[in-house]
Amino acid sequence: MEFMSAKEAADKWGISQRRVAVLCSENRIADATMVGNMWIISSNAEKPIDARILRYIETQGKAVKPFLKWAGGKGQLLKEIGKYYPFENGEFTKYAEPFVGGGAVLFDILSKYDLKEIYISDINAELINTYRIIRDDIDEIIELLAKYQSEYIPFDKEERKNYYMAKRTRFNDLKVNGDETINIEKAALMIFLNKTCFNGLYRVNKKGLFNVPMGAYKNPMICDEINLRAVSKKLQNVTIVCGDYRKSVDFIDNKTFVYFDPPYRPITDTASFTAYTENLFNDDEQIELAKFVELIHKKGAKVVVSNSDPKNSNTDDNFFDDIYSSHKIKRVEATRMINCNSEARGKIKELLISNF
Image (cartoon, rainbow, N blue to C red):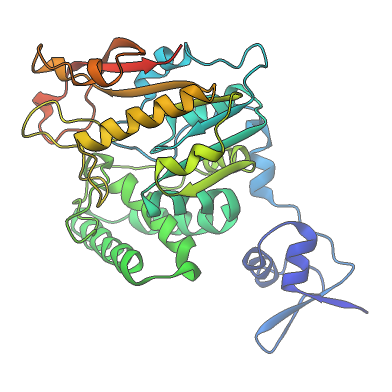
């Protein structure tokens, strides 16, 4: 009888080597034998049917949704933003979102259109790592998230707090001292913390450490396997980049629709939306982005930019009206969803700026 290694089986069946090892340990691969510290498998062995995948075949082709709650998420503005999609006549076949964040617009577009090329990026390394792991290692991250959920949910409040703090400490340790070999665990921890922390907020201190306390959710959905598998499938042909929005310049051409959702300009002197990464995005950066928009406008791309409306607090503040004076500005109503002060969560105006 001829044999193959777990790695060879993984390559043959299109799954991860770790998943093959799990299937072997569960006696789901006939004639699999442990030799030393590695599995040996009959070369004629067939890939086991994954019952989990069978359960979710019915979700194929259905809409996918963001897998994280994210500050400034655009779920509530999708109807307005969707009015700008230029894909119906087939002239625009590419999409770029250089500040992807939680990806509400991305997943709306992925659910509705089969585009030729899609590019997303963000400077948040942990966020981008999570996108990549969901795309490339979906079985492994689901295993970890299911484990976290089964451990966390039965705990009482004090036990949950201890568990949460231990996971937060582990995440920060991997964030600072980790390497690519632990990226799956780091992505799973990113999702776990997002689902269990206060308000689903991602915030770091000056040292770059995640510092949000535990939230009070009674029964959080830590492992949303149905949506995660659907997201993984949709991301297969998406280019995922960790870096500055300017890196998208070579991707963008006259066939590309581009949506920019940068860190919002604070609408008051004390407000700040810059604590979600270690990097600041001040007025100079907003001006530089406006110049970049002009650059890709000249390349023939169709562009939409969202931002806060400074006129919420100062009707004489024409900052965005000035830097985007050659483009169209629409003011739309939104609800501020993430704020430590519940009374500050209310209706405000936001801007949708377009070059068409």
